[in-house]
Amino acid sequence: MVFIAVKRSMTKFSANLGLLWRELALPDAIRAAARAGFDAVECHWPYDVPARHVRAALEETGLPMLCLNTVRGRVERGETGLAALLGRETEARSAIDQALDYALAVGGRAVHVMAGDGEGAAARKTFVSNLAYASDRAAQHGITILIEPLNRFDWPGYFLRTTDQAAEIIASVGDPNLRLMFDCYHVQITEGDLSRRIQTLMPVIGHIQIAAVPDRGPPDRGEVDYRHILSVLENLGYDSPIGAEYRPDGPTEAGLGWMEAFRRGSAVSERQVGKSIGF
Image 1 (cartoon, rainbow, N blue to C red):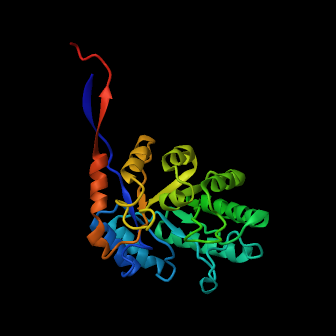
Image 2 (image 1 turned 60 degrees about the vertical axis):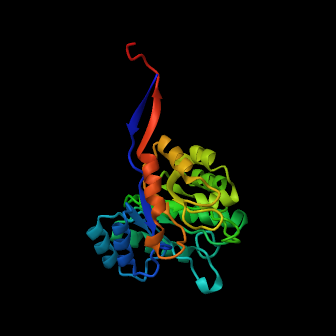
Image 3 (image 1 turned 180 degrees about the vertical axis):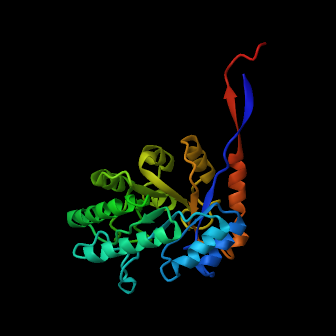
């Protein structure tokens, strides 16, 4: 028996600019993410920024825009999305169109369709119908539609709560273009058992995000060992950038030591090779 050092592809990370470099305009935040060594970016609601400015920054840096969200709706009334709201289908589809148009304009790869608050059969039926609309339109342009369960402590009343619920809805819509946004922070708070859930749900996962639990700080602290989670993902062959969607403790640049540490941990591994070596 011998141990052979095996080079692995280094883990890639995406900067979520909804939380990182929030003090900067979005194009400047993209440039900051590139300087910091991120491999991609993602955002929440970029619509106040002309798409041409965002696209210029992406082309300048070479970073892809992985995903962006549909609008929340009437934020002053506490709305958290529109797609599961009965009677608001016209607004929901307008928000989907807006997000897809923006994603097309900047070269974005995915749109997260926000469900909003609600419960019961009517909310589910509405959500499924709007997701079918979104998936059909997005597929024409090679864009993925994502749905994300959110925990009840940060997002009380949100319709989509669990990964099982999300998987059932994805199966019901029946479009391969509809996939799960697996945010480890939300899933750990609501359900736990991250490793097994990732393994089970990998066929429908479209994007993965990380943050410390329970404080949503940098991912190198808290109750989740993300080195283990990254190892699970690597063993499953997942090689897309992992979304860093956490709240920095201070200036974003000052708290990025976790990224290099995580990358060093995944760069080289040792595996046991069980074969005769001739003696």
